[in-house]
Length: 335
Ligand code: NAD
Ligand code: WQD
Image (cartoon, rainbow, N blue to C red; front, side, top):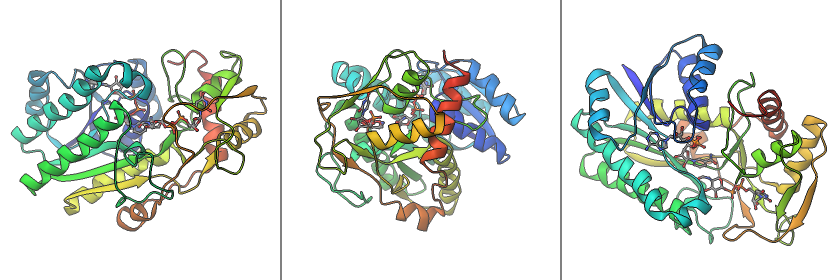
């Protein structure tokens, strides 16, 4: 039996595929390379010494997906494939709803047809909206402030309804906080197109000389140094969380949400300092206006994942910075 990983060529997907292969699982990846490169498969093979079965397929292509489920013996699905840029989602809501929601519906419809009813879903801390106070717990009210966030919220509700309609479905809704870092080999990592939206890839591109300086968005938040505080989590810890969630599905969990974060908050300037220490490279920055839609502070209560999945994040901020830098330094142009 195999684990089907949609979006398995992407940033979090590729690290999860490595952990799955290292655990001895057979993996089938579906990706249309919308936001990834074929080279990632060579790198995965190189790191693990194992083959990945790969289908270059869009998850919106129902017939192709149906063919994969007919061909392979799929036991569970990890569903990463989605668009993920918050700002772009405001400009292109139709694209985001179509890819993220129609994609999920197409996938679950095909899963249902083939009686595959175990799914781990990539949700996000963005579902906690603007009004909850950190540490954020899974039982807090959810809301969304942009189309991307709304696709995650809707997807969670769709999956909950599917479970309600048929409790043979087991669903883990994994709410990621801020994934950074890379595999310690420096062979796979985050590979953004164009100007990075997220903080860590921006910092690493300044460090490698691709960008002149970092703009720190807001310096008068109610935080210890005035800059935004987030819960950064090493992508390999995040990947391991998926293995734990898959194991939990087999126990029959119903539909459950889990925060995947460390429970620690670091400000933008904390991260800049930690990165400078890890890389011995100075990061030029300037303090600028707040970015619309940002909250001051966002970090997890990671207690449920620890108690129910037996998972905790093991890698600290220094390791996250070291591995982000190792990846960027060795691959200045990405894949
Ligand atoms: P990514 O863009 O690197 O990976 C997503 C992969 O899905 C890409 O390889 C892309 O080509 C593929 N894809 C997109 N649409 C597809 C389609 N229709 N058919 C087939 N493949 C498709 O993103 P990531 O950072 O690895 O994120 C993975 C998941 O985690 C996404 O669902 C994202 O929303 C979620 N998430 C990411 C973060 C983050 O900060 N990176 C935080 C919270 C949640
Ligand atoms: C982190 C901090 C910024 C860039 C986003 C999505 C969220 C989730 C993770 C998918 C904030 C500051 C950033 C820069 C800066 N993704 N910053 N200069 O906004 O917490 O979360 O990614 O689900 O949904 O919203 O992450 O990395 O963009 O920002 O000062 O150039 O860095 O203001 O305080 P964010 P981020």
